[in-house]
Image (cartoon, rainbow over all chains, first blue to last red; front, side):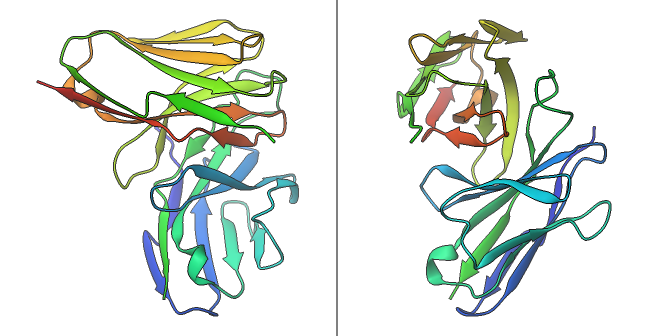
Length: 117
Length: 111
């Protein structure tokens, strides 16, 4: 069964450093998302991406964050200058076809656990 | 701002019991609602998706219902098993795909 994959599974970085989290969505999917979950808290939406541009972003997704689909398979989240409060589990998700159809289920990857020291 | 609340926060039941998990939301302009399970330290596994035009969806021992007018969804698990132990999350979906999650219900099914 197709699945979303994410690399690395764990990343430790120093405050102020740049990190890039990588995701490979399910191959025929069109919509891509990033969420994060701070330990013990709710899963929070960061950004959605469709047709090579951001569809929607949350207040969390400020100028320090960016997303890119550099080729036909990868989807990346970059944090330019990490802060302590960026420590969280970051999840990538993808969904299939155009909204309004029945194939809108979001499939999540296993996550990247980011620790900022 | 959309708020999603899940009740109870935790539930512990003996194997074989039928149980109901509740999810409530504040905005009735829902597009869809997804139920997920999350195992400790893992990602989210999709269980069921209900479109706003639907009232319920079933998959095996799971049944999810949606009542837009009252802002509620329930997940019914029949004949619970120890393998069902996990955190169950509901996600309120908008037409752009953004999911807003509740805090989750931690389910423990003991043999």
